[in-house]
Length: 111
Length: 118
Image 1 (cartoon, each protein chain N blue to C red):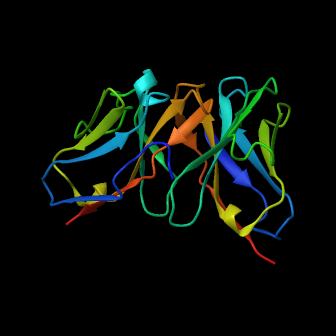
Image 2: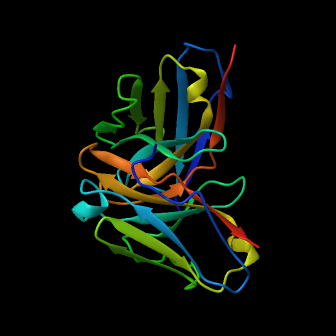
């Protein structure tokens, strides 16, 4: 059972928009700790996609965006492409555990 | 660009101790906190802990009793020891650079699969 809750899977057709939610609690996201998002392509290590709630590292397409509100955060992907098919993870800090926590991951299926 | 490379045995017997090392390239060892994260086959990510070059550590409470991390600045390496291994510890183990308690992991090593089996 992950501290941060994500849907197991989401799907969309090429060109569509999908969102992935990440729900936490008052000891992590709700305590105003930052949320970060990772993309894990099949067989590869996770790679940072969004850091500090909304910031895209250099090289990440602007089709990827994220937001945070209250005890939740959300990753949005517009103009879906087949190469976006991957697992996506959110991560934050939890002050009751005094450490980093991850969501359970969401598999994005591009139909 | 920081590069990380894990090394260690791919197979560990039950109840034995896992020892992994992560080698750091193109970065000063004092530039980051250094972390270990694992991923059981087909499952999600679990933060194991991190160490600073001073030797200061922070471990996941669920693993704290079995984890020891160390750093060798002269070799630009940091290490993980996990005792009393069981099948539940079978996972891909990643090392990663980490900016500190409210930051993110970047970059990651390629990961190394550790299987616990007799």
